[in-house]
Amino acid sequence: MSHPDPRPLRASAPSAPLAGRLGVPGDKSISHRALMFGAVAVGTTEITGLLEGEDVLRTAAAMRALGATVDNTGPGAWRVSGRGVGGLVEPADVLDMGNSGTAARLLLGLISGHPLFAVMTGDASLRRRPMKRVTDPLSATGAQFWTREGGRLPLAVRGAADPLPIDYVLPVASAQVKSACLLAGLCAPGTTRVVEKEPTRDHTENMLRHFGATVSVEDTAEGRVIRLEGQPELVAAPVLVPGDPSSAAFPVVAALLVPGSRVVVENVGLNPLRTGLFTTLREMGAALRIENERIAGGEPVGDIVAEYTELSGVTVPPHRAPSMIDEYPVLAVAAAAARGVTRMKGLAELRVKESDRLAATAALLAVNGIKAEIEGDDLIVHGTGGAIPGGGTVETHMDHRIAMSALVMGLAARSPVTADDAAFIDTSFPGFATLMNGLTAGAPLAAP
Image (spheres, rainbow, N blue to C red):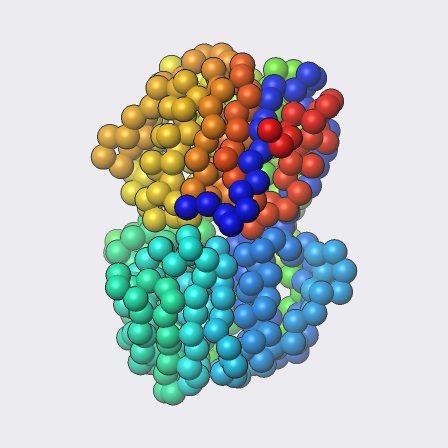
């Protein structure tokens, strides 16, 4: 399935090493949440560094449709005047969440606790993604859902007039499902309790506290138990959105693979539940270090310095998957250039991302001359210990991360690599090609 107007993009080995300092777009996870929490807080929330990609702009439009005042006041600067917990109003039209699973799932949680009716849809990719994983637990609030076969969008929701708190044990490690349950719990009296067997990104918990909610986290024999005290008075609070570590992954890996390169990515979010890729790259021998560490808006932030390194294959344990679930395609590119075999274990969750990201990653490698196989939920990559052959055209399947991974591969390959459609990169990393081209001579990323 391709975009109505595919925009292929080709990457070739640059004529000079990558060098320079750059910032990456704001963290997508935090940007979605800043808009949503601002909309249900009392007062005006000032957001700086918001990711202005298509996914987040869909969330901004949805919050407007639900009654919040959302204004763009400058590049990355936004102002949200909220309606307070329980104050959202019924939207007059369908909520179109575009390509964003995060926006769709979190918003279903928020709507579930409000006595309103809404219809939600998305693009062709989002309409294939499973929503049952959130509608099942959210039904316990008293909300009702009508979906297509398999629990897919478009769907209709009638939120609960008197929402009940949820007590839910997550069957899969998913920050989106956890967050949907917590957001539904905002409008419910009493305590909402969510248990996760594997810790997942905790931006929702951090930001709820930042806005004044009472959230406790306890590690128990059952797993990590998160409790939210319902019906808090959320009060507007400024949010500084750090650079997205999932976006920083692409220039970082490119610098590690292109000989002679040294790149500094500034102001990157370093939440320990998001930095599995950087841990893994260090295990592979990468010259990566963090400078200027600090806390901003409740989140750890720093600058990542990456220098060209000859990498070695490793085994990535399955418990690390939630902290790097979006980074496996670009890790596979690093593994392709490494010495020896890299085995990434426990990647079942990749099958239900924007594409079947596991199959798409294996295909990306194969079409560029890298031996790779999928065994169960594991991806095994046989590295070349040097240059990647390249020369392939990668099917991106409307998946921005597959497209960017293919282009990073092209920078480190003997023959150029083409992404069949780079249009979707704008959902998470507007200006990606311009920024990467700015790190070196010529324009290694260009239309074929």
